[in-house]
Image (cartoon, rainbow, N blue to C red):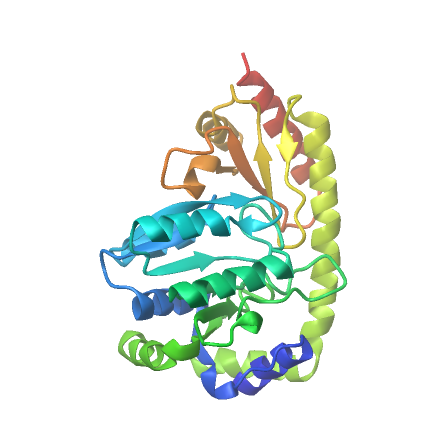
Length: 320
């Protein structure tokens, strides 16, 4: 499996030392191990704002503190704001999702990726890069990673097959750079080994190029579903609603008129059997009160269409 993972990176333009790859139980374990390798309980981790709630949970579980850094919906984390925070207090590490960030959906431009890695290298600030959506791009080119701009081993790159293939197997990995030894030691203490049957099954799938075929199919489906959902939201949601334009992945980030309380909308939708992500989940501060996240990973159907229309109507009812 390690050989196949290294081969995939090479095919996508990044040469990886197979000895650096540590196979984990999903990306969650990879991120947890990397956090423990670079920070201690009580340490502060800089995150994007908004950020994926599972990252906030991971930081909290380790007894660490998250600090939010302003993040642009197209260019990603604000490097100047990160530098200012790092000047005012010690930051143990920075955790980001540069490609198809959940919930914003942007792909950070290469120039910004290079700049972020250069800043982190100078500041001696490790970066934990969450690359779980990297294979789900809508463009013609596989996105670059922060890892590919890293010359000093400061980037701990984490990824998995659970978003791009199947969550059933829970196989992830880490490329921890200069922190490899610590991560390996922690992995040994945490789980000893990752189940080998799923690893063999996935390795065989990758070897036969079934994976590439599968990815082409889901990229096309997600891109179409994103367009359909954006069109439905702009048609049926209240006037003044703003919608993200994801470059990959499978989530939409929606800013509703300021009168709409996303938590109330979440409860109303739940009563109709519809689940949406209320904005407050994506922040530790009480931000994003009038934002919601929608997921378009399920194949488009009349039920989904009705659900989107219903959420739009409920949002309109929250205006009164």
